[in-house]
Image (cartoon, rainbow, N blue to C red; front, side, top):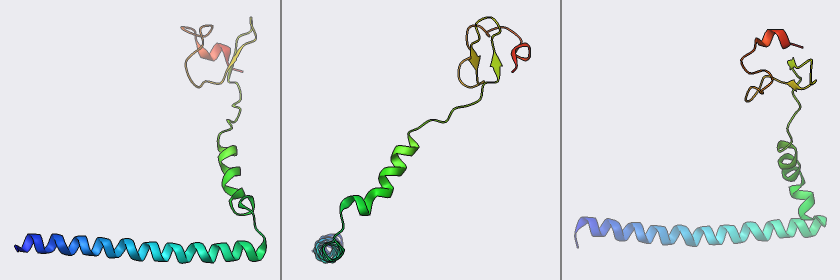
Amino acid sequence: MSKLKDLQAQIAALQAQVEEVRRTEVGEAIAKVRAIVEEYDLKASDIFAERGRKAASSSKRSEVAAKYKDPISGKTWSGRGLTPKWLAGKNKDDYAV
């Protein structure tokens, strides 16, 4: 065999070893976790509750105070995003809140 084929065979053997060791260690870890869950009578919500709260709170948008107000219609704009039609082409300082 060539040196390249020898190295490729070694890589394949090592990858198989890695997968076997991983399967064994993951199995042991799962067994430990199951024992702890059973010992303390835990539920998934006890363990993963914090993760769910973060996801829910991160999807909420915070309100931004208005910087400009149209005196005729009473509409406001925070200064973020596209300029509204009632303010387009006008001096923004004249409409500052």
